[in-house]
Image 1 (cartoon, rainbow, N blue to C red):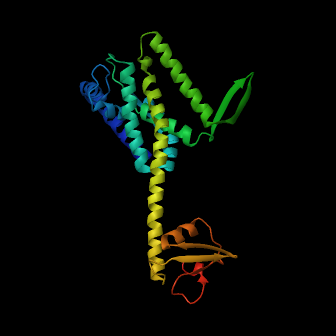
Image 2 (image 1 turned 60 degrees about the vertical axis):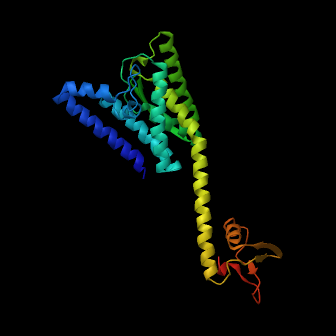
Image 3 (image 1 turned 30 degrees about the horizontal axis):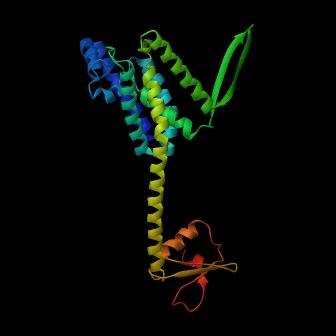
Length: 284
């Protein structure tokens, strides 16, 4: 269950509902809220680097972003875990806003929307699941005949096309000296996408460290159980399996080798103080 993704979607939706209520009841307060919490490059108050990620211009802006957040955020959250995903999402939103400010310096138009943070989800997705097939559906009418169906393209190709279109849009805006994107924050999209890609190696390292720590804890727990079963904690254990001899192992080392599948179910073990070899599977 992508709890963080659903929570972010809920927060964004709730904030937009509040903004709609303000618009219909107190339009001046509504405009003031956008000025206070939107990221205006000419001012760029520190808190707006984060708060702009939870504001949206209109209902269609919100719906579009939430669809993309669900599609890509849920997948990334499932792979890297909730805490790491939330950390990446928030930091990426801030850095995407910084990219927009750097490109649109001097603009007095507030930036709002989760697009930068969601672009980071897309950037992470393309590295984590680059070969995943994305389904497209088509429908059109030609000479009174209906054509409909679907086709699949790899994620890396789809994302490359999307990224290329944003680069092109940014280049066109810069060449016209109007880096506002005509309402599209290309700089935030590009910055967020690159931050998401850059975050993947760090997220993978974080995951490996957690797995190593959990593995060490599991080994320690199993070693304690094995000690309780009759093997002394300081024993040097030798294993015999199909004519081959392994060891000597400590309890933790024996458990680790067992987890790697080094021994068969017929393997025997022995240590000082034992009268004869015994079946390893009885204690592991």
